[in-house]
Amino acid sequence: MAIMDAKWELSDAQTMTGNGKVGFSVGSTNVINLGTGYDEWDNTKYNGIGEGGDLWLTIRVATAIQPGASTFKFILQSAATAAAAVLSQSAHELGSWTYTTSTGGAKEVAGKTLVRAKLPAMNDATTYLQYLGLLYHVTATTVASAPTAGAFDAWISLDSESELPSA
Image (cartoon, rainbow, N blue to C red; front, side):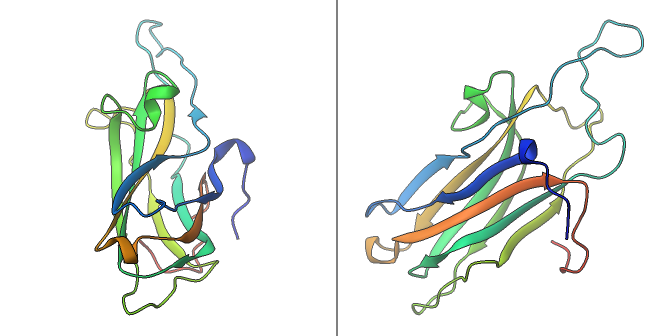
């Protein structure tokens, strides 16, 4: 099991119910401030995320999702301001993962890991801005299949929790 730092927690049992809506989006409860810095020449903003080793995003069911037939898209975003890191078109997308719940009334149980993915290292192709947030986008096939219960935990850690299968 990974050691979790509360400052790297994006969501803690964050509810994902749409009150009868077929589609809705929710930003993570917490936003991570990566800070700012400068390179060795003191002229470029730089936060060096991922230089010391891999970082992993884990998203786990905290409370069972009910009913089935919903699609959840998890989007990791980076932005220049905390408010823009979630629910913003101006945020920079770092990665996205999609999970579709079971159909036929089956439930996704608490404790089930839906996403475990290595974050992209910062390089010329990937830029991390100062703030990191997670956007949850939920789409149901019908109003009746929209989630009426369910919550997620999401965090970033140094450990991939290797006892679980890779994402």
